[in-house]
Length: 350
Ligand code: AHR
Image 1 (cartoon, protein in one colour):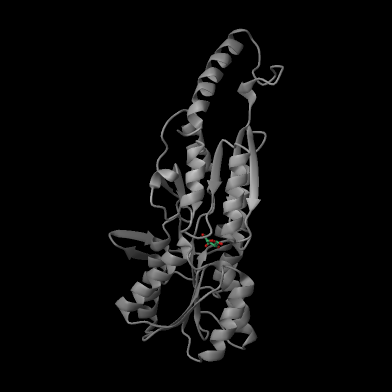
Image 2 (cartoon, rainbow, N blue to C red):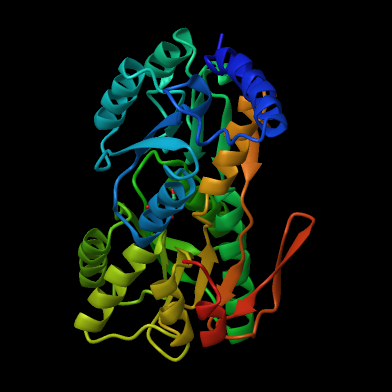
């Protein structure tokens, strides 16, 4: 049984105590002693790392949500992109008997054993961002994140519409992938591969860029050295795109509508959108990192003894250098494409 079922009684106690305090004119918060009702909710959060601007924004969202002031005790551990560090972090959270474990998994597989350990001691696990591939879905209470496959499909439909409009045919594409085995990589890559099959595009090469600027640059340098006819660089996040742009410029080439190639990216963090304004990134598909408030809603629900929604998706947009393509259709749904302006960038939280 999950541990928060024990906490349910505490919740009911708080309501009774609150009623008593209000009727006697006392404040609960100023009550003396170390009474249970003021006990912080302890959350152990295992973050992937700090590989990208997106990741930094995601960490900030969690830290700004689970503050001491609001009654939380957040234990934040950075796994430096290593699954073994995340497994160790989860075990340390179990030892510390936290109330909730929040896990942003680096890759999908390899979680069964440690999540079973958390379940056996009744600590609920909430997954954020990427998915876990486990045999038993009851090993996690809820998941918050994005539809990475849909992101990839939106990018490819935009590319198809843009290429048709520009009269570009027989596209030669290089793909700088994310960390292999991460949901963001699996789904963005597979969306590209499916579109390439459908539209007859030529994927010259695919290589992981680990979601970092440094690796994105290295991979792009290698690709530029091998191919003289690249039309499209499909980067699986903004930091890889920043690195790829450095390599393109260092090679004396240009990215943009009138340049040698166009760059497509994911995340739409602030610096990514500045590169969209100047056309260096032609399309940036948003990946919304603001998971903190959604995770808090889940925890609040569990604190009330209620079952949370198993899957919660965040909202996301599509940002382009121009307004030549107003919307893209994926399945039955139409998604608006926004032209990036300075005002738009300044109005965004990340
Ligand atoms: O899992 C989300 C991806 O991970 C983001 O696109 C990337 O920037 C991050 O590091």
